[in-house]
Image 1: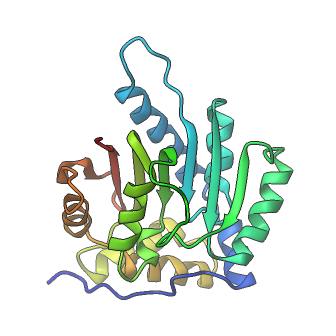
Image 2 (image 1 turned 120 degrees about the vertical axis):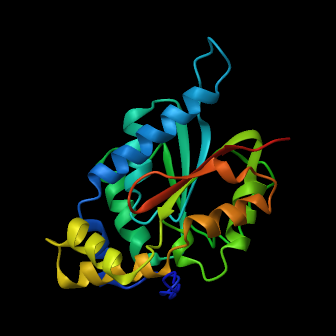
Length: 230
C-alpha cells in the first residue's frame, strides 16, 4: 500500500524554520540542481549556438541559495526569486547582499499559485522543493506553465514520497541523521507531503507535457525538465 500524502504547512514563515533551513547543508543539492539545469539547457539549445538563460523565475526560493549558485555558475542570467515567507526572504536578502548578487537577483514576496506576471514573461522557470508545500499543486503547475515563454524551459525538482514508512525513515537517517531533531522533523514531514512519481507525471500530462519529462533523479527526488511548446 502506497504511503498516504500528509500535508505540511504551506508557508515556512517562522524565524526558527528559516534559520534551521538556511543552516542546513544544501550545498551539494543546490550545486547538482544548477548543474543539471545548465546541462538540460545546453542539450535543448540550437546546434552550435551558445545557450543563454535570460530571465529566470525561481519559485519558492527560500533563502535564495539556488539563485546565488546559478549566478555563480552562469554569467548570463537575471533571476526573479519569489517566496511567500517573510522570514525566508529576510535571510535571502542577507545572502544575496553578502554574495554581491543584488544587481542580478531580485527578491519578492509572491504567491506561486497566483502570480501577477504576464504570460510568457520568463525564459526559464525553475523551482526546487515547492510542490510538496502546496496542498493542491495543480494551480502552481498551471502558473509555472503560464509564465514560461513559448519555447522556454521549465525545470522543477522536488522530493518524491516513498512507498512506505521504513523507506522514509531510512532516507531521514541517511540525509538528515546528523542534523538537529527539528531539522529531521522538517525533512520527515516534507517527504510525507511530497507527490509520488506517478502523481507528478499525471499532473504534468494534464498540461500537454509528456509524462516522461518527469523522471526519478535520485532516491528521494523527481525532476521535471521540459520545453514549453508554442
